[in-house]
Length: 370
Ligand code: SAH
Ligand code: SF4
Image (cartoon, rainbow, N blue to C red; front, side, top):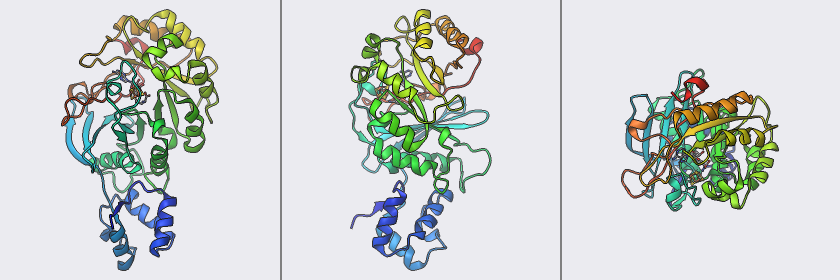
């Protein structure tokens, strides 16, 4: 019998499997505590489970994390790990330390089926969805690195998680949902729901489900204020145009001033960065509790765009800010180790390129474009 990885199995699945194995349901809670609170890598260490129970678990399951194929550290403290999964596929995970938190940028797919014209991942075909184990595993690897076992009570190095790495998370909804339920369960990895942000290119029919079932924060890759331009930059817009997308944002469950939707807007020189577009942007999202993240474009070899000038970014940010929206400009992090937006790539398969977003720093508009 092939063993299965116990990491990433939902509570419900484990309860059913345990029943079949003759283990009582309360063992699920104990095993989760060992796995996600203590981070153990062996059933032998689960000393409140009988030897017989441990041996059953051992016969049925493995406890498997992705392997760290390569680790790099930036001068700014950002770390990037190239993770290798059991079938040899790879993805990168990035940790960005900030003063009061640490954000982990994780991937949901190897590659992407969508073809956003400014995104490196978009030039790569989808290889496959990541499993829930591989999604949860990215967080566990980071916690291993920071020795965050058992789960610390106060400040954590891994306090925030953003699904902004490779892939479109709402096209791998089931695995993402299972993983997020483990990440946010207080008996799981115990991360706060509001500190997990899912970024989507705008898969409208899945947005409400994401809010109702998962209750996490939402980021929308907007990038353009007209359908004409968005069709070109984010081609899924042809299927789910701006009007429908913004309607889904207005209806996002639990959205409020305390829980705002983030609109991501990549700054492309001469393409979407005019003051007129900034004005249109604030009109478009009016009434939606929102913040806007301006992302300086990170070029990649052969990319058809350039990053907007600091002046253009400043002028754009100013309009947004004056309209009453927080408009942090993302400061690229980890550029020296190619960990910023559009810079990730697989080291072992050179032709395959991916990206992960750099993470927003809430810096004042005046210094944003400095
Ligand atoms: N597929 C999801 C999540 C991954 S992309 C989505 O599209 O939202 C995460 C963020 O990085 C998105 O806002 C994306 O538009 C942005 N991004 C992609 N390539 C980039 C690049 N080269 N420079 C700057 N931002 C980029
Ligand atoms: Fe896929 Fe997001 Fe990149 Fe678009 S921006 S190609 S949806 S990863």
